[in-house]
Image (cartoon, rainbow, N blue to C red; front, top):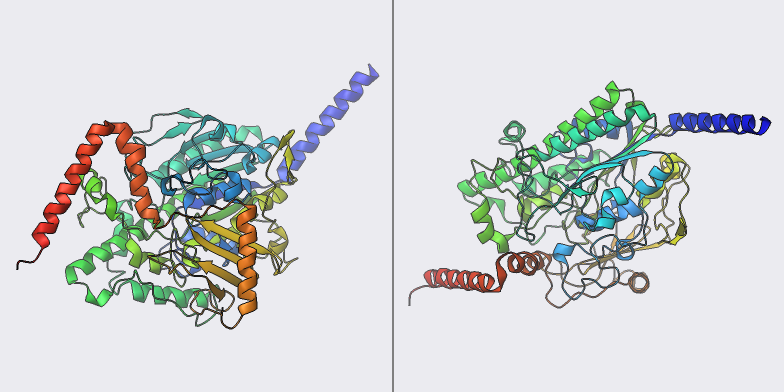
Length: 586
């Protein structure tokens, strides 16, 4: 009898202790924007109205030297696991992966079985866990969110889709858009708007689980601002005439504002990308069309911020806001691809009429010139290893005891997010074993000492941090960066930059620092060997590879070999006909 009473008392004490611990353990809300440039957010120098994200920045810390991968799936894989994408299975995005790489170690294109997610670790420690929106780290049964630590989920397995019609593909690289709810294929509403829907479902999950009295971990994977650029008209029209001076003027004004905010050094020099057109050389009609593109882009970001505001309002109304840590980031830099190779398909699916851009059935892109402005003051954009492709805004807000409205300029990396969240939740890192399974150890480090002012750097100045995606390479060591970008944006050669003084990567220091230049190349080779990085085939281009992969992954399975050959013949005939019409007469 005494033993039973002792067991009962101990059980009640343990339950009471866990309940008390949950009261002080923070809720965690991760907000992942898609394809936002470094200075798109108002608090990072942008002119777009993002008051709710800016409020998080004022209450928290802005990281001005935060790095991700240059495309979505690799970044998300590292965010969820804390493991380098070449070791977690997502060495490249499937849609851009050359056939020589697919299926090789590290190039599965989805999470492998040797990693554990932050959601799993938090779930096992007593958190309720939710995800809505873009998943994009594997649609295999073992890879869906319910098997990766999420209690409830409604996710898109693909890289993206239409924002008004969830069943409409944005490019012809698959037969359909894959949506999953709690691990099972699901039917989506015929009409919705992506940012609104993802926030609606997140609020539903939070409300339904509130009675559990457990802290929550919620992840919202927005599609904004992935192509096609789309937004409700009232958000777009707010920006009418805002971009009449063009992309170069916007790039300069954003640079100046970012410097004023203390995010970059004053007078930071900027490179002019070879893909940026001359605004003054455009016709008046072309200028109007280009302005509308950027108005739609701004409206889409504005709309996302509006729905983030709804989520924050819900948390304040339910009393959860003050105990919630927010993490906001973009998965990569701004999108500069023009998708010219897919124009024939796009014309059959969408309109690109100026008066319809942003609306249902319309397909908008920003193009390389506006993408350069969105990444201001940085060089390159999505897919490339320049800072504009891999340096994005990061805001962490709501951490107890941290001085508000800080700017942190230390080099940080997306693999640092997982250990930061685990430390905040009081959950130990798993090492190389979890539940009797060997796993890849976490590569990142907790940012909590940096947030609390106990450390000046997240990573020692002597630590080499390597990077590769689609043949574009980089290595960081303190303030120094070694980088190589492939054509057409890069020249395929190594360059050395001091990011502390020159975040725009305008001055190559290899001649002034030959020993460091050589040593960092050696460091990169060490990284590439240790992580199984594969060389790219000659002539590789990521946007062209998307088109080629769509042929084998969509057109052939959908229409068969005969129809595929007929389609190719029709395209070839159309190209020849156009060429003949353009050929000057003798």
